[in-house]
Image (cartoon, rainbow, N blue to C red; front, side, top):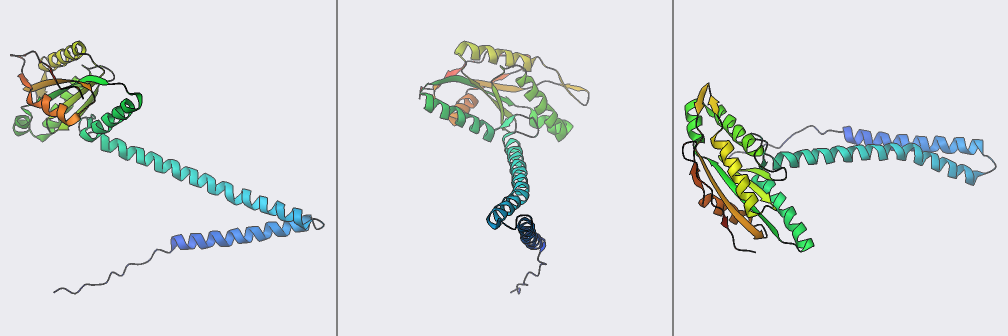
Length: 253
């Protein structure tokens, strides 16, 4: 049995020194200002005390408030940066599954407050030959292909639609407020852009093998159910054999 060795770390006394120095400095400044006020107003000690207290408050309070405000803004920026990194995929720049859940949660809160129903669609896109790309050309080309597909999807959808990377080789596109005709139009444009695109790895052209599926919703957004339905109903699309994507419809919630 190993004997536990006690930790002998050196204590950092810098914070204590700064605190002690601040207390001493504050006390010295208060005494000095009080003395100067009494010397300037010897016949009015009450007024001198009020003046010295006001000066001490201004000279010590304003810097502390400014420092606290700066630190608060710095912490807020850091928190926003952390939240942004957690909600966005580093490889593609799309939102992550967590980011999509947060977005849908916000939509649901607004729906409950307003009492209105939500309608729209979710399109699921999967790259079937992503592993083959990595095995043939190296993992860096898998990332290049993911970025290429994400960029193609982003330029083929509406401005307010959300593209999320929800798996190693899959993306979900949330079309909030889209009618069935609008969802079909976006999906057809997206699929056409993907199958007609040209991707080259190490100078060699690579045909994309994709599966695309779609599902409509009305009422509320069951994100997990939408993803599962769209993925299970996806069909294979290629440049040689592109198929029309038939949208399923989830029961109204």
